[in-house]
Each structure stands twice: as structure tokens, then as C-alpha cells.
Image (cartoon, rainbow, N blue to C red):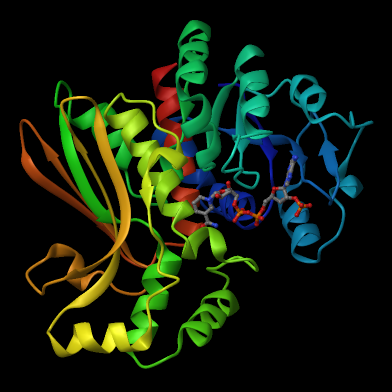
Length: 343
Ligand SMILES: NC(=O)c1ccc[n+]([C@@H]2O[C@H](COP(=O)([O-])OP(=O)(O)OC[C@H]3O[C@@H](n4cnc5c(N)ncnc54)[C@H](OP(=O)(O)O)[C@@H]3O)[C@@H](O)[C@H]2O)c1
């Protein structure tokens, strides 16, 4: 079987974790799935790009990335400066798009994915932007091209949320869902329960690489809102943008609020929820006090959880303990295998 050629756009936490996982699973992929692969191109934002149709030495690429060096050292031939030209020139079969999320427009990831699909590649991403801003266009294009546009890791990292509905729940109708979908805020609330101040909790979340240098996207509920919008758009079939989700973050919660809830036997959670209504869908992100009997009460630290309510199964929950780039990488790997199986 010929190699499946891969191009990576974005080689940060997630791209590198995927590279490590691909290397670790090389034999399993070959023996169990009949998949052999090589990486023919890697592009970053400010750390250069490499193109080698014979296959890039991925161990070396990881060493360069970990040392903060430029990917240009790996290039076997001239690399087009324009990222869309690079995608076309790579001749790859699969694009992994893992560039930073753009909440407002989804760009430039949408252009990257559109270009890959037009060139006959499968497009796989952990980036939520293209899902909420171009789901319909990109999935129609993928269908027309006989390729897959998959994004399992965009919500709940590697937990199989989208594949669950796509593969395991045919003809089911999602009526509502409720969950904790943002790791940073859940960790901050957990640390505040342990007596840390809001600022100390944010600083800790940053120090372990969970929160961004500017954590406002998490704290103000934007990350949770874009995930809610992605679930509503894909699983409920109602296109929804992040700014259409009613949103309140955790920025106004004080240690006194946390302590008062604890004294009453409750916990604060940044709850994400959506339900069908007669005109469409009501979607919300808001801090809520939950009782011990609530499934979200035990979701602590960076963990996340969601309960789906459908017309056929009642309540069905997924809980993910301690996610990180390694679990995000698994969602991308699963999408890769599933895309090749379906093609
Ligand atoms: N971290 C997680 O666990 C996680 C979980 C779920 C989903 N995600 C999503 O996965 C994506 C990647 O996250 P991450 O944590 O890996 O981010 P990251 O560490 O900041 O890495 C982003 C990568 O994209 C590159 N890049 C930036 N602009 C680019 C462009 N125009 N063209 C090509 N490459 C570009 C960056 O290069 P430079 O460093 O040179 O700028 C870097 O290599 C994001 O959309 C994120 O929301 C992440």
C-alpha cells in the first residue's frame, strides 16, 4: 500500500503531540489498519516551513520545534511562502490544521481547509473556528470531493463527541445538552475552592500551560461559547455563532461566592447548555451552583463532561479526565483513521 502523505499546518502543542503519537503508533497503524504514512510538509506561523516529498524526518522536526528553531532546516526544496500554495505544492493526502483559533472569523484556518479539500485531501482539525464559521460550506465541499472534513478534537479534546453522533447514534435527535466544556475555568474554580484567590488560580493555570497568556477568552466564557456553538451547529443542525450564545464568564465570582456555595453544600461550575425551542435553539454559558446530585458536581480540575438528551436514549454522558494535547492528538489520529476507512 502506498504511503499516506501528510501536511501539518501548525506545529505547536497539538501538532507536536500528534507527531509524537503518530511515531508511537506507527506499527499499530500499519499492522491493525494497513496505514503507512510520512509527513511531507510542516508549516508554522513564525518558525518557518519545510517541504520534502520524500518524507521529513519527524524526530528531527520535533527536536527543532522543542528547541524553538526554524523548520526551514528540514526543507529539501524551496518552500512557497504562501501557505495555500504550500498546501497545493505538498501533494499530500491529508491536511492536519492545528493553527490558533480565531473566534471572530475562523480564518486563516477556513482557507487552509478549503484549499486542501479542493486539492483532494482529507482535512482534519482541532480548531473550532472553521467548525462554527464554515461547517456547512466545508462539509459540502468535502462531500463533493469524496473526502472528509473531521474535527473530533475541537470539543472535549479526544473524547468521541462528534463520532458518537455520526457513527453510533444514527437517526437519533439531540434535544438538549449540558456540560462543563472549558478546562481553564473549571481548574480555576477548583483551586478557588481550595482557598486560592482568583489571580493565584489564573497564574497556576497559566504556569501549567492550560491558560493562555491572555486568559480572557476562557474566563469570559468565549471558549465555552464557541464549543457550544460548534455542538449546536453540527449535532443539532442549527448554525450558531459564538456571539449568539448567551454568555457570562467567571470573572465576577469571588472567594466569598465560592465559600458561600461550599457552606451550602454546593459548587460553582461554568455550565454550558443548549436546548431546542420552538423557534430554534436556546444556548447559554453561565456560572451556576450545582448540587452534589448533579453529574457536574464531581467534574473537577481540568476535566470536562457533557450529558446529551436525545429522543431515543434519554440522558447519555461523556466524562473526560485530565485532557491535554496528548488526548487532543488522539482525536486527530482517530479522525485520520476514520477518514481513510471511509474514503
Ligand atoms: N492545546 C490543546 O490541548 C487544544 C485542545 C483542543 C483544541 N485545540 C486547538 O488546536 C489548535 C492548536 O492549538 P495549540 O495548543 O497547538 O496552539 P499553539 O501551541 O499556539 O500552536 C499553534 C501553531 O500554529 C502555528 N501557526 C500560527 N499561525 C499560523 C499560520 N498562519 N499558518 C501556519 N501555522 C501557523 C504556530 O506557529 P508559531 O509558533 O511559529 O507562531 C504554532 O506552530 C488551536 O486551534 C486550539 O484551539 C487545542
